[in-house]
Length: 68
Image 1 (cartoon, one colour):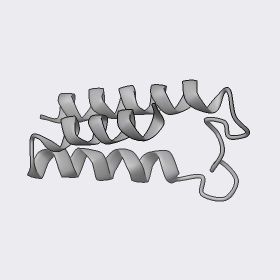
Image 2 (image 1 turned 135 degrees about the horizontal axis):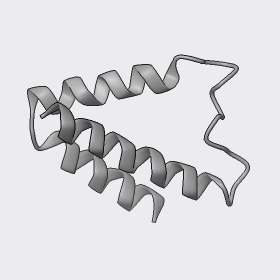
Image 3 (image 1 turned 90 degrees about the vertical axis):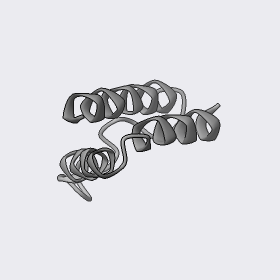
Image 4 (image 1 turned 180 degrees about the horizontal axis):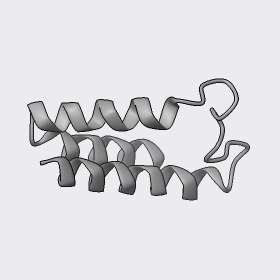
């Protein structure tokens, strides 16, 4: 399950990075205001997927519809 959570997180992070490249945001947007953002989000996603296996797919779908 942890591997699936990491994979889903990586895909979401890649989508955000690609989408942000065309806007005023960038992948390091929170680097100065919240340097631990990446670590916090990754841990949260992994914990959510551990509790509910379908959460990874739900998050991916949420981001897909939100971004596209």
